[in-house]
Amino acid sequence: DAGVIQSPRHEVTEMGQEVTLRCKPISGHDYLFWYRQTMMRGLELLIYFNNNVPIDDSGMPEDRFSAKMPNASFSTLKIQPSEPRDSAVYFCASSFPGGALNEQFFGPGTRLTVL
Amino acid sequence: QKEVEQDPGPLSVPEGAIVSLNCTYSNSAFQYFMWYRQYSRKGPELLMYTYSSGNKEDGRFTAQVDKSSKYISLFIRDSQPSDSATYLCAPTRGAQKLVFGQGTRLTINP
Image (tube, rainbow over all chains, first blue to last red; front, side, top):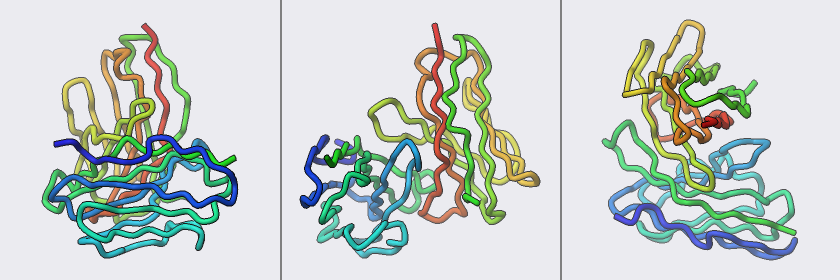
């Protein structure tokens, strides 16, 4: 199994530009999570889906952020317009009920830099 | 007050030392207590977990929970340079949503 796949691995963009981060969860996992990690705030949950439906988006910082999951094998996190304070590592994770305590499997992350 | 508090460190110890990593939490509904390990420029991976209070041992690692004081600990015996990583505690009620501590960055010096 290839694990959770994220793309791109690195993204450098200028303030005001649209950024789209992509995630392919592990096949058979029906939960998908988007996190943001910074030195100051640690690992924060932004949103999570169950069977492609958003369950909790209370961690999405503001309307500039949006996430979709059009099918079981693909999700996107979009930032429009991007700002320097959005610079962080964004992780996608997936899990399935009945696994070891709902263990979440993380992707390698996308390192975003907004200039 | 944050739901989970964890000293971010950094913590640096010599090889072979016993390491103690700790978290406190405020939500008494938490029943499962997970520890994730994150190597540099990688995603976190589940290291081990405990249920309710008590100890759980896995090789050189011991996880300990004291629900009366809402205190979580991870001990590493005979620490190795390969243990150098960030350790994140993540208590949960058993639902899918995890609340992570800020993570403690640990370096084991040869």
